[in-house]
Image (cartoon, rainbow, N blue to C red):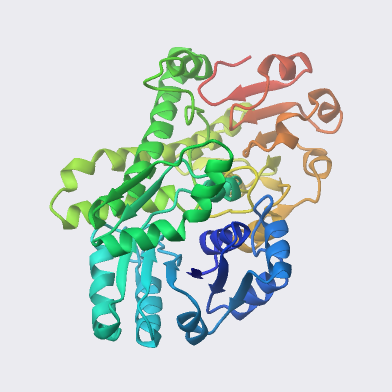
Amino acid sequence: MRLSFLGTGYLGATYAACFAELGYEVLGYDVDDAKIAKLAAGRAPFHEPGLDDLLRRNLAAGRLRFTTSLTEVAGFADVHFICVGTPQRPDGMSADLTYVENVVTALAPLLTRRALIVGKSTVPVGTAAWVEQLVAKHADPALGVEVAWSPEFLQEGYAVEDVLRPNRIVAGVRSEWARVRLHAAHKGVFDLAATEDRDVPVVVTDFATAELVKVAANAFLATKISFINAMAEVCEVAGGDVTLLARAIGYDPRIGHRFLQAGLGFGGGCLPKDIRAFQARAQELGAGEALRFLHEVDLINARRRGRALTLAAELLNRPVGPAGPDLSGARIAVLGATFKPHSDDVRDAPSLAVAAALANAGAHVHVYDPEGMPNARAAQPALAYEESLVAAVTDVSLVVVATEWAEFRNADPVLLGELVAERRVIDGRNCLNPAQWAQAGWTYRGMGRPPV
């Protein structure tokens, strides 16, 4: 069985390389010539640990190729995975399905044999049935081309492992032929699991449930993050410590510790736009009241970024007027530009949003990130960027740890204290040891933690 992955962004490029590693013949497709050329040279257009090695190994083995020709894709693959982006529409909260429509309507007329088109992109419920209609309209009906939906659950920074060793596979299908075909397309995953004595749960569903699984999972994770950040807000006025609170409730197996780290909130290219699109689609279907809580989840998340700005003003003894704090002339280091460590993704990154807000308040902001500097420069060109942690913190009056990279978590507060002009730190990810920093002479403030 030959596989194609339509769209070679974060999702498609990772899946293509990993499935080639599992032994499949794989063809990746994109309209972006520069992206395809880079992938064909064995370099991913984004940072993901381990991915470049997989690309180079499988390109050399001949199992993996990339192309800008849909005609080549149509003649090559038996199963086509849709991996294009579904960004938020510029005129509202809904998902923009333009890329999905474009690739389906372009591919379908080119098919010359029976094939399965499988959606992996995160989409509003009802999209799979709509794609099925597009295929019926544009493909030769005699071929019997079918559609299925199998959402992805990749975590940036761990995506290679998530593809090779998924914690579940969801298969939204309408026929036994599609189910068998989709199972065969994942045989390499099951074979690897068997050799490692693991099980890969498979949930076979209808289209609507398969589509809802992904957005429901993201909505739950976003809610859990905003819940602990709401608790941080309460802790800040009550004098509690949200990290101890999270540890205590996390021991309850019904709750668990994961995603209970209070801080600047969530960001990236998935959670923010997915919960908004979910709300918009529920409203269209007449179930908007059921997801009203997600609006508050979004608001809590946004408030955490503003809290960092308020903390900066407090630590620097600056006034806060109707337009916000006045940080004119303050020299501030922001450590982190990506929305999470082990990634170069700065989309809707709280770290970069905080850096921009500090600059807008008049501060001289110096940003450093181990992997995200090029993307950060493109997104916020007015900020100053430094090539090292040392350069970023030298002569500053405030350090803001905004992404929990190991380089920042493990930084020596004594050594950094010798570089800064004044020892003040905001731990935007609650990833530092407050006592250790206080002992080194720093004024420490965390998110939802009492002053040390």
